[in-house]
Image (cartoon, rainbow, N blue to C red; front, side, top):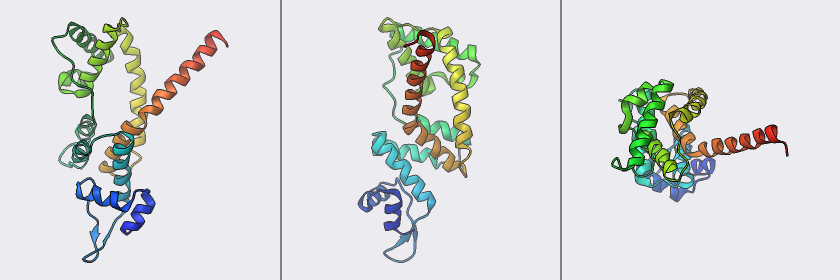
Length: 213
């Protein structure tokens, strides 16, 4: 498709597409002459992902570029490639390791990882921004008088295993590793609000089942 067709299919304006091309967020099209290029479905898919990260996720362009660099790094195995792309997404500031609440939260998170058998997460530990964010969240709960320990975290972790299985099943429906990792990044940006809403609806339903109206 030509640039105008790519714009129409993606609902992204031509000036915005040109900006994404200049910023390296979208690969150049196949040049057909001095002034025109052709684009394919991979460009359309990538354009939708970029728009999701920038417009919905409010992710800065420099961060989007780093995420996409990991998505496109075919020197990495699929698991590392996926993890690196998700790690590059914006996170909260790292917790202070000297904070007593952070030390306690770290111990509980480590115990939870051992209980559920997440040996890779336990091995990576502080290297993972997701691990650090979990520690920070648990520490914040403790500061506010809502402490959670490993025993309370473990059932949620086991439920998340089922979610992760379904996530990767859906991801593997995409054709090729790049498309699969793109789908995982898009889900991290777009689908997590869906999971939050489903959890709240489930709580409402369970409350009605237990207590009535």
